[in-house]
Amino acid sequence: MADEERTEQATPRKRQEARKKGQVARSTEVNGAAIFLALVLTLPVAMRWGGERLLMAFQQQLAHASTQQFSEALVLGALAFLAPLMGVAVLVALLTNAMQVGLYISAQPLAPDLNRINPVRGFQRLFSQRAVVELLKALLKFGLIAWVAWRTLQNEMESLLGAAQLPMPHALVPLADALYQVGLRVGVLWLILAILDYLYQRWDFEKSIRMSRYELKEEFKQLEGDPQLRARIRRRMQEIARHRAIGEVRRADVVVTNPVTYAVALRYDRATMRAPRVVAKGKGWLAQRIREEALKWHVPIVPNPPLARSLYTQVEVGEEIPSTLYQAVAEVLAYVYRLRRGRR
Image 1: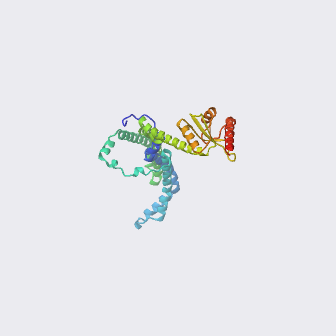
Image 2: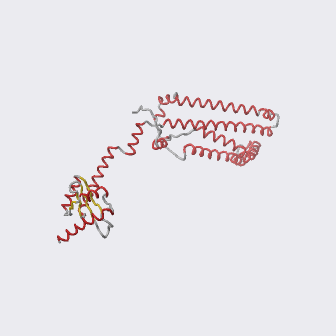
Image 3: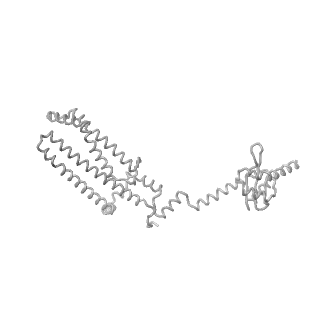
């Protein structure tokens, strides 16, 4: 059974258990690519926000380098420059993680596991099919990113050669623009590759949590219970209900019988009931027990086969009789009341 092929989609319970263990469809490439691209797009804002301030503070620091102390202006300038970048990085990291796996925290992956330091398992993971796939993906990503960066620098080569002839402060502008173009194109390409990697990780995750038909049956047994156990519980509940119903015979006004096969105990209280109510009913040996209980408590037994069958099939224990049986039951109760008055 353990070697049975896993061909069935994972159940919600299986997915929940995997999620508790930290096993989810997630690509770290998406986080890295999204953060990198967000930082590239935020960099011009950070430069306008605190770049000039940081540059001036840095120049002042160089002019007073002999003091060997960081000035307050340099620290504030660095904070003004880094604050937008750090804020965007944290926000994008949270958003990309939430988009992939939702807002869920599991400490189980942090629990000690000796298999992680097992050298045999580590050797198997190192030369596994997954490791080979990850290596090929890394080589492909590095090659494409390097090619895009090189092509972008070639397009910007003319402006870079011109910047080399300019004084340092003026040369920084074309250099920064070239680096921005490289970062933007690399970031877009990285994000596209990351999305493709996420789709692959999702496919691989769905494949890893597939279940065999035997596992589906076992899970169904755990959720619904063993059929044999449920049958025993159902029989036990029926026995309890029967004993409780037999105990109600002592409060009945009359027991209508077949006279052997069926027995139905009726009770009617004008103050609390709109119509007579079935307090116990049975067939076969249970009908015999109801008759015995009725004799024990001196409850009248009235043979009426058609009425007994109708009451048994149409009315459950605890329910009032239907209007179609009012006339027949009323005649039986009237007979019982006449018997009681005659005894007095």
